[in-house]
Length: 194
Image (cartoon, rainbow, N blue to C red; front, side, top):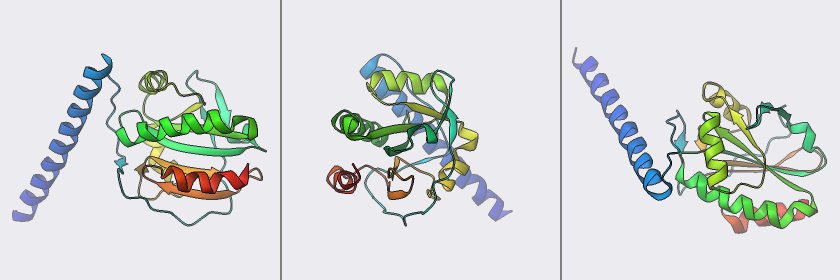
């Protein structure tokens, strides 16, 4: 009986932390923009720690709907350097990454760069975030129920957002990063591929 109480107590603490975090995010975003961009998903935000994961050889197939409901495949950007960014509208570190990716897309688009956002959450929240963050690249919608499987498939077994992958023109993994982007390191990895 004692262990059952302990499990219930820990579970209650987790629920309280999640609710408090969601409410604080809602309050901050509601005050700054007058609109809410919130969704609570089973994904961890990684704010400071960056982990470079082993590079994969084969890129998984990827077909998801974009924010307009159109089916988009990763293959449509074949021959370009693709930066995939897994993010969530409610994740503050993700928003910082998005601002950096907007600048990279603008700076390197003519040299063959294509940034693609993979947003976790519902279409309405992601659309609102795309508009508020002035995202200049396509956003594909990951169903929250499928997000863990998809993140694992792309090398993110810890289920962390933000999470970014660079794929070269030949369709091979070249770099992966969990957490907020170190822009200097990211630029060092990206430039030789363009």
